[in-house]
Image 1 (tube, rainbow, N blue to C red):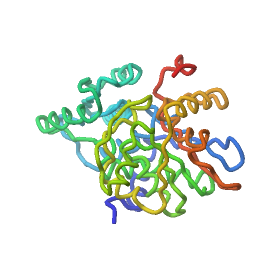
Image 2 (image 1 turned 60 degrees about the vertical axis):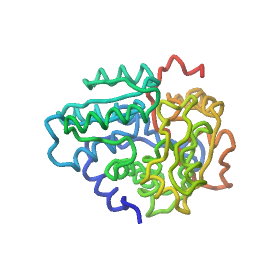
Image 3 (image 1 turned 180 degrees about the horizontal axis):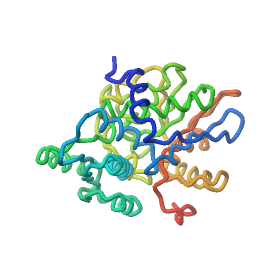
Image 4 (image 1 turned 90 degrees about the vertical axis):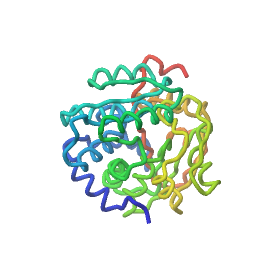
Length: 307
């Protein structure tokens, strides 16, 4: 039993309706779909979980909300907080891209940049939350956050008419876990894609529990969790899920291909799932209907032709 059920995802969909976008699906070849979640408010799927967490809490404290993030989650929390009229305090690691930091400032968030990696920023945020009483919105390991992210899965199944496989990137695992639950009525295979240099799910599956991993590579700012979330591990340990690793070179190539072929401006993490197909890390069967989630756009467009 998991702490996130299909009914929780349905409830989240009702709760956040009108606050998030129903992002489009692009069929780039027969039976191959791109779910363009990078077009979501704040540039990634994470606003779904942020809204669901805040709205599930009822009345929010005067001190507002607090979050640690590699960038995208912070942007989502800041966006949702601004929409709901509450204060947002965001802790980000030093590796966070300038584009994301600038976005946080534009949304009026109070920013603290600290620590070399996400986990260090998360420790600082937890300490601050204990001091202020602000509502903590975790990047991936809260049931309300996972359920909110799962609404993407509901949309994929509705918009495509059903698929055999959903390919999605994994960092802390909340998005992939939510999509796994959100698509459970149709039970497609879930291909969970990780950079070779941040294999949180792969290492956890081999160890039988979440374990720490080293963090590095081109997608570290968004997929840089040091271990898989407990909720995500429970969900993604199921028989529907296949773990796949991709190289940094494959991610860079996929990001460039998304731009050159489809004019989709993705960040490296956003292109990781597509990299699994382009590199052959996942090979679809003839006639297999596949949805690939392009999950983030917070990047500098001028850098599309470079790593």
